[in-house]
Image (cartoon, rainbow, N blue to C red; front, side, top):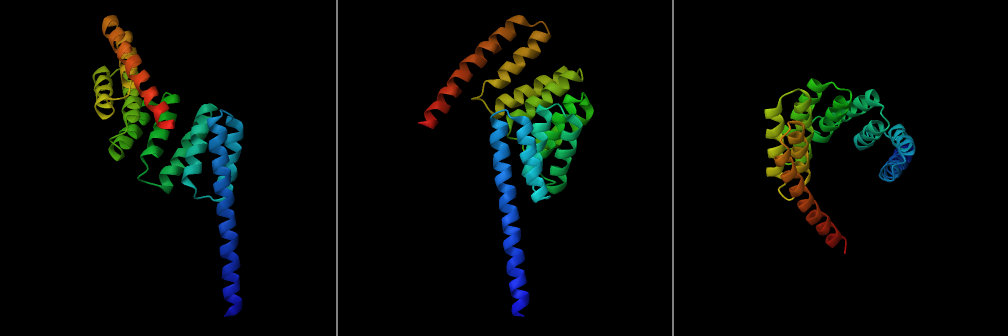
Length: 200
């Protein structure tokens, strides 16, 4: 009985060390990604996954990094793994939708982004991403609707106005595009100031 207990303690200690190593590599990957050292970040994320094959956040980081490295098929696989490990992960569907969009597989991107929005309807960036996909699918009405939804969800953010300005410019609505661009600049300055205050 005592020998069994010691064995269990040893296994637990080893397991804890492995997970600690995975977490350490994951944090190093996040840091490298933030510094735009994408090859280094990818290696760290792979190392974290090797230590813990069920580390969903590491797969997500790996997928983000693979998009930056234009390894879009690999990114789809990484985000699919996130979804398998966390079936209700809005970010998993969002990431895979973005990867499909970069591959110009817009119907698949639309499906994943719609699922992401259903799981997290309060994230304006997901509406923006789907709006761009709708625009590529020539569904301008749906694109504008998603941009307006992004504005409703995040009225303090300027990015949706910038996106609408881009859509309007493409539709030769130059005056409306200019107005939205000015609104973007105003809100963006205000938002950046709020971030600077929060840091103090």
